[in-house]
Image 1: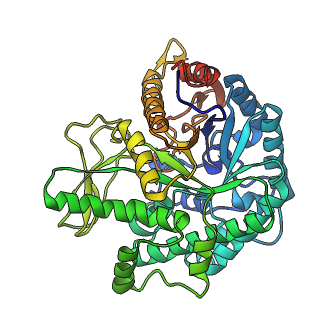
Image 2: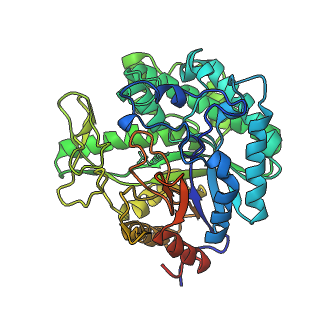
Length: 466
Ligand code: BGP
């Protein structure tokens, strides 16, 4: 018998910019991704989410497919500029209606909605005022969160404030590959701080408005393994843990930054700068749950050289290069690892280990696996999408998840990425993740993949058949 608790939710996930399209329809304002993706050379072969997979117009059809698959929960994000075209102030009622209809459609099929408030599509109007580097964006986020609670709060019980701060801040302010394309670690740390404050403000509003539900935060779960047992690699791996994990999880789960690292960044760059009251906000308004996005682990070695930011966006194996911070650590290929075409290591044990690491450091916090999946170029045989590698990947990770539950972790749901093929931010439409295929040659027609039928059986048997 599988160890999945009775109320465990079998879900799937997407994000607004990656599926909706209709980027300038029905009163929607532009997001930073609408603007950035139109600048030459920013994305893979100039791909963008103007149309994406047209979920905005095909929402009912997509929800019908979710229902057919037996999905028990659907994690999606709200496009902030679709509700508030200027980031604050005037409400776009057509945008509210879209999400309201989506929620109703899900509930009509007994699919539990999980909302992510921020999956990277900041209103451009707020970026123009300084984006995450200024406190007024955190204040606007609270206004946006309150609007969502008011309009959807009686129907939605699961809320996440932010998706993967390390990615949108790291790429937005250190590597420069996401908007606003800055390359300055000090500015990254300050922007990251405003995000934690925005999160705490949104949690405070959630408590003040007595919303009947749970609110959490979604982080990348990325275990680190030293390349060798040399003291240098061990230190490098510990540093990666501190910067990539503790810095992002501690403020939202413990309400404080890791003390040693905080002292170092403040001595080095004078950031993060606190304003009076920040300490209390972080301490008093912590998460009800943590969402973990797990794809891969990283193998770590000491880096005496420069900052490295090369990665594989083409899906040509071994075109990845290395990633690392000057003088601290770098991520390198594990000589024994099995890799995807985008050079991400497939290592299911990391899901068990990562969950247990979270439990050990943060205690019995409820956990949702909010993303997990395989990005691949799916084989098509006689018109059928035979995505066996995805089935194998997910099966191994469900095994790993079951192990963590058996070891005592309080995991309440599993949301593979993604429900449907969608736009990968920097990798275009070539990198597929979905249970549902989208035919870009045939007017974006939906087709069920092999994994669709497989996951349906997993859900139907509550994880027993897989
Ligand atoms: C996560 C994001 C998702 C999604 C996924 C796959 O970081 O939350 O939005 O894109 O990774 O990543 P990619 O599309 O780069 O393969």
